[in-house]
Amino acid sequence: MKTIVVTNSIQITDNDYSYHEKTLKLISSYLKYTKFDILVLTNNVDYFKNVEDNRVLLVDYDKIFNESITSGKKFNMHLKRYPLRLASKMDYDVIYHHDCDCYITGWDDESYDKLVNQDYDIIFPNDPRPQLGNLRKNHKHFQEKIDREFVGLYYDELDQAPNPAETRIIFKNNDKLKVFLDFWDEISNNNNNYLTYYCGVYFGTSSIHSKMKMGQVGKNLKFSDYGRISHQNKTLNYFGTYINE
Image (tube, rainbow, N blue to C red):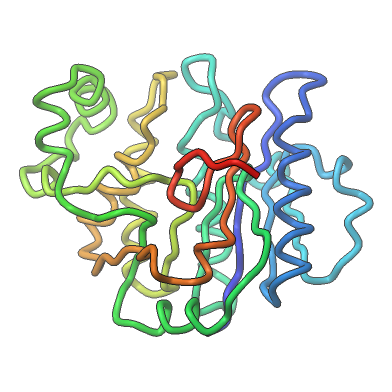
């Protein structure tokens, strides 16, 4: 299956290029170890001017979108849907969403191909068990998110949504993805400069609404051995556990 890796690299503070630096690491690692194409949605295309590879598609955020890049004085997590939207209109079977601080140290095609050829619409790095119902009942900030951003949208079945780690999520490029993205658009339309952290809520509820069949990346899948996340001054593995390198 033909795969594209997609990510946001959005600069929200003048002279803070840290996420662009991490994006360069993502790009170089995937160019080195895979044959995947890479789509980067950024508001600073000039920063990547030295990336000269036809497998890398740089998209200027400001020329296409006008949604605020901040919400609640932080990065607007709703923007994570836009690289997915762009790639969904392209000729790819699989869209592999990454946070820009992800990268790899190697690759295994066999285990990856085995996973993406299974009957799933979306594949999370963790167990897609129902979580949101309990989270919103037991944690105030989850219920506040529902009260603010899901006005007129929330219904009982969404309590079955997982709250996935959003660092890496694999999508089949199909009709359910369009429903997923359209629902997320509606959630974002309710946003009124709220803090949009805990964006797993958007991924989870949109998955339930679009009736996606959900899977997860098992720790026995060899390609996950090479997944890394740069978090502050530490390194995490594919599943978000701190490791020493």
